[in-house]
Length: 496
Image (cartoon, rainbow, N blue to C red):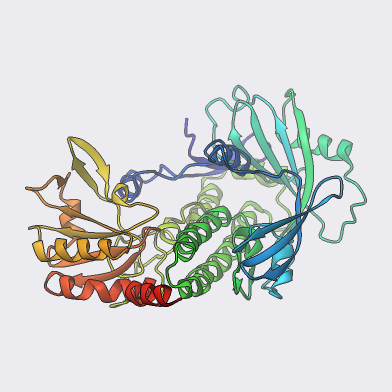
């Protein structure tokens, strides 16, 4: 049984035509596990949103079924008009506006931004349904199932094999939908499952696959995140992950601006996040196009359509099976995007670059940890007070971290204390065999040099890398360049 499998099938409960297993290379899996304390998981958006909602502070006001209409500038920011489900309008004042309002973003339109890239790649009907299909799939469990069948082609997504499923059915891009023919698509769903299963359809909806990125991410104090800023094919799973990174990048910068630091920091949001979205959109689209290789390999007789006759021949021909499996193995980038998930490296005025990050032979699937400025702080296991922690656990979402290793530098400690007294949000951590925080294994020493001091931002990206000799004298310049000169600000405040 392989719950990490992606299967090409004639029906969900039918024959496997080929299988891609995420666990087929134990060495690769073992290496991936060393790259992060929280390995990848298959988490649907509806489940994530519930987790997010459950963790919101009790004081947070949530307005369900409300829509942002427009905003007008005011002395302290903006006054937004928000419309409720009954048409009632409410005025809400805010210093900033974050447009996380999806692919049809009104906020994007309001700042005059436009989407660039293919608008219509394919149209789909999504069927969300509940069914226990464990017995039907016994020994053939998986995460994704591509049904190759001219009568009921589509993709099954197993959010929970015992209960929660989505069937994604490609439909004609020119097909007009005055309303979804639920009876028609319920019949196609049952045919695609291929067994008499007890199915409870929860919803049906249509959507258009695009590969587009907004030409602008911000205007003054208004910002775009998630699908409002970019729309990707789901081939690769980068859409929601890229949206997370948008929010992660923006939130601490807005917090710094609200707390009185130099608001020019906010201008680094677009140059840091948009290039990543452009790369991710292109790769997601390419993943989609590459899937046609498998369809072509499955079309054994070459008549342009993979049919039951093709599959019968495939099952009896080791050579044909090998060709299909080879085409499937070439889809690895679709199912392993760790290089793009973890390897994002920023360039902006909030980064003191000192060179490019290392590049692997396959930057899509292979992430190379690095301490180069702009890169994400690498994960390594440490020991603190007898407990195993990650280097990422040293971070605080509201503060910068100055991370050093080896012998404690007293001058550096004094410099950090002076910065804190002046109001800069900074903490220090030192990792050494003789210290309170120790390396758990050799991985830390292999990545972190004792003659380097890292300045890590609240979003876990490295802002600067200084030599130990220059850190004490150079640290102030790093903070002034990113957050502004607090001394000058205080003088101006006092005069005002």
